[in-house]
Length: 301
Image (cartoon, rainbow, N blue to C red; front, side, top):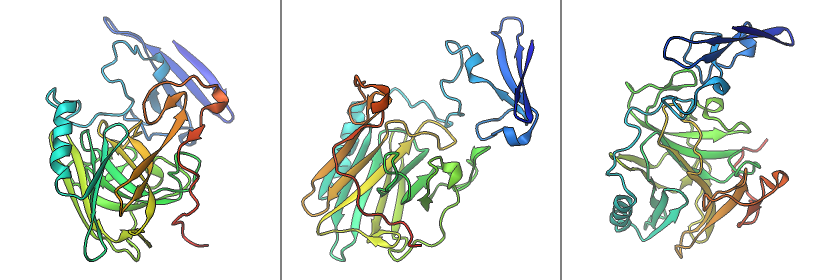
């Protein structure tokens, strides 16, 4: 069965197909390349599976994106194993604090005023990042420099990570568009702070990124006071997809070891607890906790 819909100068054909023993599947056949975003599409050009037509109960994947080769993790990757792993890592640093939904931040201040730290994640290695909190309305991700460890140094929006290429740590500038495909090209210039030292720790169950640096890009860490940072991770798919709740905005006091996490409510879910809040739709982006950020490392015009 084929249904034709018109959108402007383009036409979309919704094609329903079925075969013996298989549930019907639907595809969008788009006649103009301008109307087709192939970012999440592995099918031939102009042929895209329409998610609303998938038999969700029997679909092999719960995500539109291809999973990492070793996803899901082994059953031995328990919360208890993660707690023990974090406790062992914490011995190497003066301060260590947990972050919502699998994150942990560790640091010590070295004699040369560099921060020797680590961000860790209770998940597989797709990407793991930390950076300055930005000024955008979407969890302060926009207009910020972030340091990002990726499972492969080569990435494309169409094919995802190339696992024939080794992992890498890059500096990125996030503009106004959030998805990696919009800012996938790393910056060659690490700024006045320099690249510093980075080491990726990839284990069967958990991931970490160690670093030693004076700051991020042109902005040094305020080691005698506080800084406002962000972190995010994805350990599920090979396209550096949505981090879900594995992200946060947090303020760290480098000297005292205090850390405060900003909680927000989006689509009725509390970002810190992961629990649903009874909120109205117009309150979906209500944010609580830390005051608005007043400083950005955005380049001067």
